[in-house]
Each structure stands twice: as structure tokens, then as C-alpha cells.
View 1 (cartoon, rainbow, N blue to C red):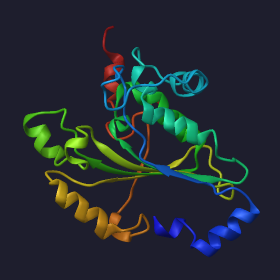
View 2 (cartoon, rainbow, N blue to C red; view 1 turned 180 degrees about the vertical axis):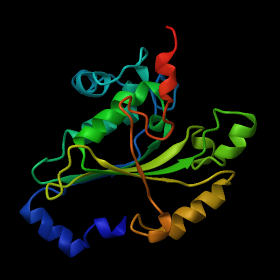
View 3 (cartoon, rainbow, N blue to C red; view 1 turned 180 degrees about the horizontal axis):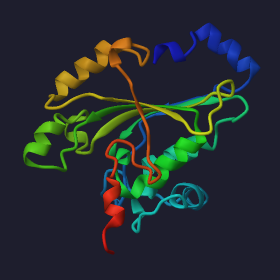
View 4 (tube, helix red, strand yellow; view 1 turned 90 degrees about the vertical axis):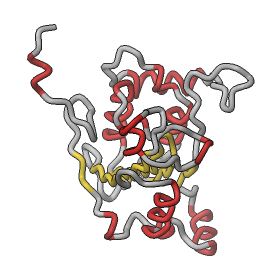
Length: 224
């Protein structure tokens, strides 16, 4: 992402003109954790949770929407609310990647598609809450013993010079059966999202908010 961030001298000049419009980080993943002994206890933020409720949850058709109140989803909401829509900006996060195809995060996917102009998602996989062949396909855990969840690198971009009604979604899957070291080597070799070897795939979400595992329309014809 180096080309997205100005050199120090340029950054100082930018600060004189106005706020830096890039928010980046690795927010914690803490859904369901309540004990003080947990690694990332869920804290209550009523105003922020209300924003999640009237945006992500409002657009969701899921019955159980608890996943939308995970800390990393709240971090997306917090960051999106701090970008200046007139000036534009970028959110760059390394997070739990379960939001990509989770049933309860359909509203989140719909919302960011509406709120941003371009989205880039690098799916690093590594979901070790699976087992057997599926676990082997998912490959190594990016953070080792630090997390058993899949991991993704996500960039959400607001570009006032290229406004879109729906975001253009660019997606790259790191691949099957890769070890942690192999994944880290691939990330290092790519170096930048502008690397032509990444071969970004443009996703076309359906009306249900599916991005990478689109449901078949035949299910809508089944007897309830």
C-alpha cells in the first residue's frame, strides 16, 4: 500500500491543508467474549452500536445479527463515520475475514457496497474453525496461534472524483492448501495492490448480499 501514503514531507504539507484521510489498523475480533479473562472482552459503546443497528443490521435479513456487533465490525462503522464524504478517504484494515460469506454479515456487505466507491479484498483464508479436508484447503493461520479465524486485508475507498452508486468490488483469493509461510511470502512478493500479478476479480453481488458464494435462485422456489 506504499503508493497510497505520501512521504513524510508530503504528509506534513497535507496536514497543513487538512486532516489525513487514511484510517488503517488491525482491530480486535471479540464477538461473544464477556469475561475479563478473555483476550478481547466486548466493550459496550451505545452510540456506535446504534449506528451499527441503523446501518448494517437494518440491511440484514439474518435472524441472528450478533456477528454485526463484533469489535472489528464496529471498527469499520467507527472509521466509515469519520471519513469526509466530500474529501474522500481510505480505510485499510486487516481483520477477521468471516464477514465475506457469513449469513449474518449480509447487511454489512450491502452497506459498504452503498457507502464506498471502490472495495479491495485480499482473502488470506486460514479458517481453522473447520476440520478435515476443508481445514487443509483453508491452509495456515496468518497470525499463528493468535487467531483461528480466516483473515482478510480490506480497503474501502471513497473517491469524490469517481463516485459510484454501488462500489466496484475487487477480490483476490490467496489460494488453496498454502502454509502460513507460503502465504506470508506471497503477500511480501505482491507488495502492493497495484501489482498486476494479483489478477483482481471483479465481484457482482446479488440482491441478497452474497459476494463470493452466491446462492442458487432455485432455493426461492422451495416450499417454505
